[in-house]
Image 1 (cartoon, rainbow, N blue to C red):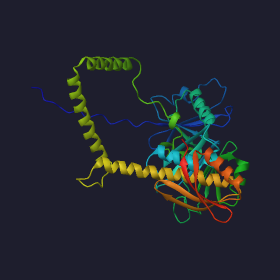
Image 2 (image 1 turned 90 degrees about the horizontal axis):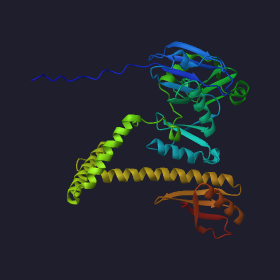
Image 3 (image 1 turned 180 degrees about the vertical axis):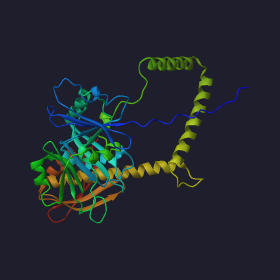
Image 4 (image 1 turned 30 degrees about the horizontal axis):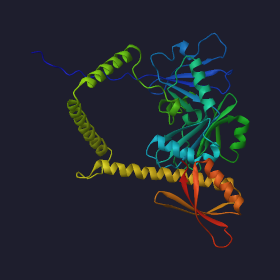
Length: 391
């Protein structure tokens, strides 16, 4: 009998990182750097638009499946929000609600999020047109982007004089690149033309420095946020070509065999599979709830936690919609706010029926229907309402 030896899988070979800085104008040169796994620059170049050279790919900088980080310039707004969310889809929905007034509608707007230490979330907002343009520009260079990051977020975070990151007294780091400033400071991250940067940063201590790859290296190796989310997320690893046909053939054979099985036999298989799925669900639910007692019902506890997180998201969405609506109607004011039984209740001051109609229209545009629950006795200048999602 031959002895059996367990083969240990070889460790993955660290790959270099290709960093490409896309300009806002397609006619401008494209700068690129290749970083080793330690963040040291091992190659660099500049590709001139319209030249005979094929860009970074033609130099071999993008070969061997190197991870690609494409940093973009202006046209992308970065925010930091205190959003209570347990997943990226929840955080994205909450960010859209909290930024509803600024976004002026969801059409043509792309929102990407990433968690930060301390419970906050980074939120980047860009137009769908800009996203498509940036991705097309990368593909024109022979690259398929896996990371698309606002350039300012690749700069190191500011450090205040007290040593704390993002301190209120932190300097603003402004990296100068082709008549633009890539800026990062406490509560801000943006790229603008140099002249406008002076106006935006007036009164804030600023350190302008020439853009160097050493400033971007740490962020490129571990990007804090990837714009390629939602409909722009990279394609998955689903089987393609011959592998997909083989898989389809196997599935078809299984389906055909199932159809000819006796009903009682099929019922037994279904019951067995249902038991396995229920046991798996219990195990996964218990793994996600480390504080659950040994005799506790994991599925019930998980449903309660999901319901609680939904309430948090519902409250965030309703509050953001109400505040933006009140702000949009000058004659109204928010005088009281409560959350009871999964419903947001508010007391709104107004100047008459015209203000009430305008507020109702603003709420409807944000997906909410105000339900009137009472008025003040003296002239009706205060309205008590609750918000219901529109069907």
